[in-house]
Length: 71
Image (cartoon, rainbow, N blue to C red; front, side):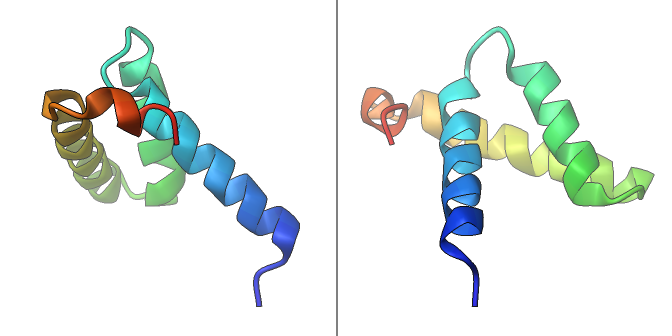
């Protein structure tokens, strides 16, 4: 079972990613997150980077994008 503190950390990290989508700092944050999720695999890192960019595009193109940034 995931401890409450680990769950809170994951939730805060996810909210930070959503808030960063579409900002000037997105590329740096996306690259670091992709590197972390890929665990050393260059191919996986590129795949994660593309996945994160697709997610950011959905969030920033949404008519309700403002509500997503306040999770």
